[in-house]
Length: 133
Image (cartoon, rainbow, N blue to C red):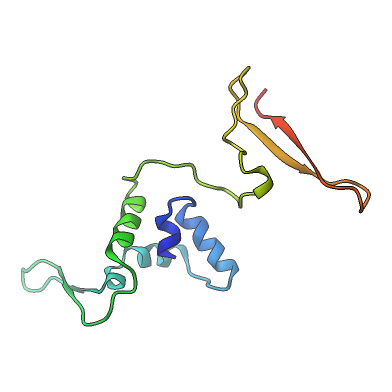
């Protein structure tokens, strides 16, 4: 899950929903807490006690993910990373240039869509439509 979020292609909430469809039903708040938990990089939190502040120590357990991935996820959650377009749905490999082509006349994004034929043996065709005209 950390590696999926670290790619910064899809939003963490979308990734959580994707895992929920696979049977890993984790509430959104628990999922975000898990992404923030330093236990996964081998650290243990020592709570504040008698005026001393809270701090982290190295645990005896092995880290589940590397620190670089963990801190990349933290930057994404904090919104400090450069914004990249998030995917709202899976990429159709036949339409991989969707949202990247721009109309030279009006400047709107060009998008494709799949058209299903009425006859079963007719091949599927793809057409280009222009949004926002």
